[in-house]
Length: 235
Length: 235
DNA sequence: CGTAACCTTGATTAAGATCAATTCTCGTGG
DNA sequence: CCACGAGAATTGATCTTAATCAAGGTTACG
Image 1 (spheres, rainbow over the protein chains, first blue to last red):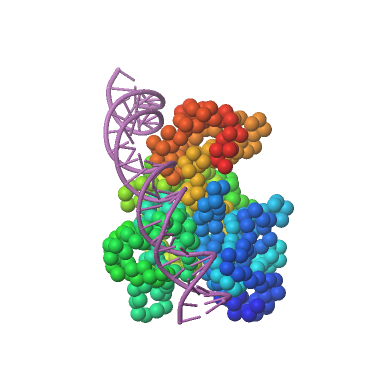
Image 2 (tube, chains in turn purple, orange, blue, brown):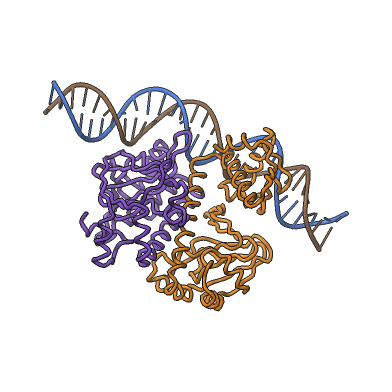
């Protein structure tokens, strides 16, 4: 794997030449097409991943078959590292499983895979990695707390409005001119699942916002007509 | 503070004499009565806490005033450490806030408080602490994922059944004989808020389970009459 | 024994899920 | 270039769950 792809992963940034090379020796590259499963939550834990290109969803499924997306993982981010640390002594003795299911959402999704035991060995000599992982975990904890707040305290309209605003913010990072539109990189179905609802309800909610002239929906593009009102609606 | 209270906190266990003493010098003891606020989510971040005795809730409140409890923190556990690591370089420059609200649920709730900057200094010379914190964060991430799964994919009956079973399991750790009852250490109101519902709905749900002879509710004691059925109901 | 906090119960409402039927969109092959 | 078909999205009608509103009952504790 190109060493620059590794260095773009926050927890591996600023590693010295030697460590980067060692890491590169551990990493296995895996490629998935759209809708291919990366792991199930029933599988024994083998190691964690980072996204090089493409998009990955982490999700749970209820007995009745309803899906809820916990995370969408974009390039340079890791996933499934949590079990590594849950009970650091017996990851290997106990039959640890993956905490959720994982699926590629785009064709040619390329991942780096780090086997648990090799990586754990490397950690021992690299306390800088664990500090960066702490930072990564902290961000994720914050994200999950917000997520709970959203789905437990806000109705679907607020969640949709909030999502559009958040997405607008992140998509405009680095750009100077403020384009008032966002582009969804996931299907409406996946978006609904991420927002803790179903596609019909999402569709109706977008329609309602459109009727109120707050946004305009054109396929996977959403134009924000009235940012202030959208902010009000998201609370 | 009694040094043994410190050593019972997982992230501080197995520290040597010198480090424990140093830590003890940093810790400020604070005591709260029932319903007293420990911090609001609007407050600038100053540091984190651990519970010595008592009980603490971490919660969010919606604009409409509805509350949702994210965590209940029991003795020996830490809370509000997350912001320490979110952006490790600028905890102090940026105006970081506490991630949620926090309130004592019992009289004489005693907490240890660790100011952010003193603790961060100490971390630099103690990589063993950061590994233990990683483990603590991992557990909490797992907990929050489950929580999301619960409230987004399960109805109230399943959540209540699941809660009773989980509580029964944890309350029976260490005991040999298997007592078929649990004792709530929080009000029904708080339990409802923790389960993502309201007290009326919780009351009805417990009544329903009682009518079906699955449990018997006597104030804050719940007797499990039919564990198998309860498990079925929780899925 | 009085009162406040806590809890239960009932009636009603509202949000969103479910079920069902179209319609739209876009890639593929003729 | 068009027609077809499959998957994605929309729309409508109905149903279910749980929230809300309101009133009354229980418990604990000074």
